[in-house]
Image 1 (cartoon, one colour):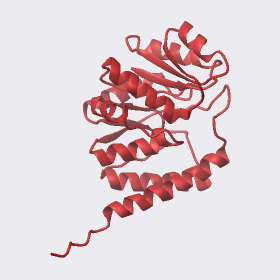
Image 2 (cartoon, one colour; image 1 turned 60 degrees about the vertical axis):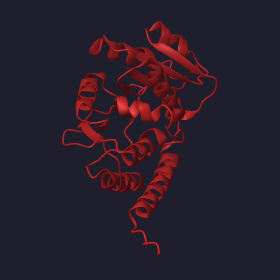
Image 3 (cartoon, one colour; image 1 turned 180 degrees about the horizontal axis):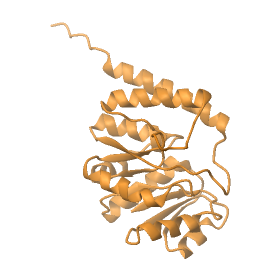
Image 4 (cartoon, helix red, strand yellow; image 1 turned 60 degrees about the horizontal axis):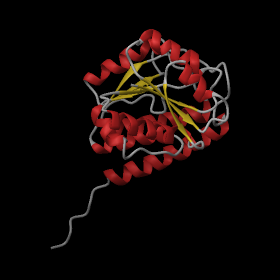
Length: 235
């Protein structure tokens, strides 16, 4: 199943659904209408998607929590998260799905030799700190922890349908931290990232950068606490 969290994306959602159907005609598509005030839900339904509408906006994390609950209840074996704004390439869904033969979660990384995606300044520094911290926790490389283009297999669905962080970055950084601590395996595959052409992001660049920094420090402190040696209890 492909899950698309969508908030006021009436201008792009039909094209995203159509491109997914073109590359993966047999896959079910779930659009979680995250409290939209436009016609996102109607457009998505007319395009052939299953639509679950939330009464108010809860953010991507909350929308994906709904998607995982739906996937668990309906017995899906895999779920792929795709943005509603057209920034992800549906032709790469196959690689994310195929990677679940080896990993519980597969993250589409935007940082690879053929990528044209670049991040500079404090935002890039924060992303690097997150990458290093999560890679250390997972004992394997995680180069793009904030990528929202990712897949999750059966064990991840079982975990996330009842334990998925809803706060900002919870659907990316937070969920990876929970998965790693629970013993799930995380892999990566290179993906393409397009620039948004319609609508606007839910958070501006300055706000996102500040929160990335906060999340980096919180995750680093938590990781250090967990790796600190415990004192032996006195007899």
